[in-house]
Image: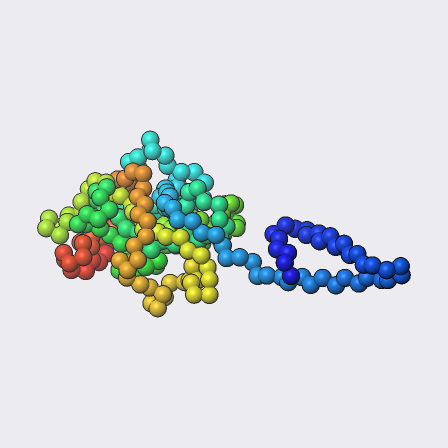
Length: 240
């Protein structure tokens, strides 16, 4: 009733003595109480993320800093990955709350186009962002530390001039980490009830290392009218 240990195996040595000249058998019946495992240890700190762009859909070869700006033709796919760095917890799940594009490095500039909203592809896009599953088949050490999606390249549309804006496009994401529980399903599919306001719980911001320049192809032109900042304009849509 007084021994506490975290060692395994545990050996308890018992010594008994009594007065007398007669031998007697001694029966010892120890009771072992099994406790439930402790809750996972948590530690506050900076969440380090990386947003990188793959050269193809195999997600094995990546653009590096010297490759930017990346040149791409309108409507060609862009293969994007966001991953957690410097974490070894296999139960940790990376969740993308929102992803968007801007024509400047500033993530909260006046012009933006939503790619993911509340963990789901933006419904106002004729060429919706495609979320890709990342599982054990990807041969990653921690598949849940990665999120991948495919974007069809586009150009921002100037409402005043009625022309596509040429130049650089930057990708940004807001992400957070999640631990699966009875209350939180970190991999819940997209549905109206699972969606929430993109501003309700802002996560960690991550931006691509450099921009993409989308070259105009008159026969494959896909133009998106950008959504201005909240309170600065009407809804956005997509035209071809």
